[in-house]
Length: 271
Image: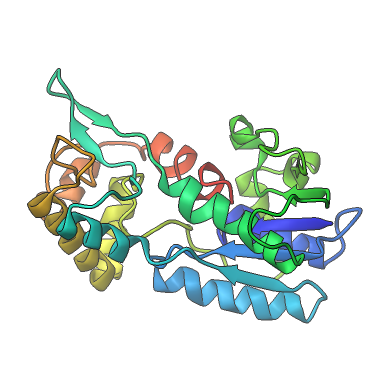
């Protein structure tokens, strides 16, 4: 059984469409998209377009979710109950920003995909997996450090873009040459991995999403999180989003490639 883990960003979109065009030696039996409940509208629009497109080409795409990560965290903050951590920034003992260990990747992405695979194959909760799964991962040559072996005996990770020696730029070129639109960056609206350019783009082109991120951060800071002793921030400057001048921060600076590329949710979140 071959399953494609879909993040609906550049690499996994290209990989899925290439598979639908029979550009690999085999095709996935189906793809699974893990919806955190806080995806930008553009990502969801792209996802449903892609789902319909590849369905006509013989690859079904399924959507699965654990719930709405934003609502879950806001509820936990208000009730002071335990919650899954996002990679918030907090002030360390040296006064500098440090990032906490995230759990959202595991709980809202990886486990969601694996549970959906089990469901589609007819397994009950707790039942031992008897199938061997080849899981297609959308990782390109310029992010080879993301490649990891499977976590379970029943899964083998497959990296088709690596096999084709394709970079992220090659993926964009393939999309353009085949007449497909450029996919949006796949990540939650309030993901702390956003860099200044992404925050500025959201502030200017998607003010509703930016407002959501600002209000989310404000509520989390007001009530706190039970598992954190320090105030959580969505930006590494440890300044609330609505008080940051992103344009000023970007002037004379090159794009922060670490946050813009290596830490984007696709790949880091196992999708």
